[in-house]
Length: 306
Image 1 (cartoon, rainbow, N blue to C red):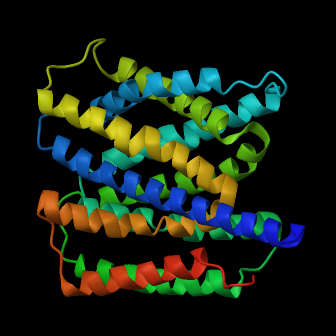
Image 2 (cartoon, rainbow, N blue to C red):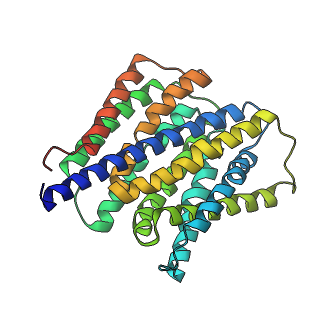
């Protein structure tokens, strides 16, 4: 085997691993809405619940941030400003708006609105790089959005008090998250995936705790053990692990493809919401899920010899 073949094989392997990381991150993030809706069955508000998530996550990010320091590549002033900005926009603002929106709408509808971020990311990336979308990317978008449209039509009956407010909050959350993904794709290449994710997450954790200190008494209100358990599970399975998988996926396959693979998230949430929350699930949603999966495969799998 010559050097070119070895190089091509290494590229394919990295693309496969990056795709797997992005898919696992999407699945992990999709469980967040389930944990939140389950916690809302108890007397707890959005800021308190988000604070629990961040408090339980903070030790992980502090440890990984400490061990990810690279003396040979110290962070410059510009890097710190980038970490601060993206930590506030991508993790703090996006998470807070999403938690507030979930108070009013279902987990399935929330994830469907969040799915708009691949379009935003693709358009932002295309504008910044001054390129047109490739046929494979367009095909993936068409297939995925056709599937999402089917699932969305099935959920049109979810009308009730606060629906417009909840949907608007989640939509703005999606926009801020898209800005984070585009910025992260550029920052990770310079700062490093683990170091960037750790420090940006630490910024968001302290921002959430600062908001809690301003808006709540300086002690946690009496909460049930179940809320603490859900907060801990959310910190592990919906925050820390997916965040690192997402950063690694962005580094290996780029923010655009990572965003498209994130279309697995809505499908996973619909299944989980049906099982754990009793949200409706019908044939139309199954067909939509299949189209979404087809879109993910169209963008994730390169043809042999490519």
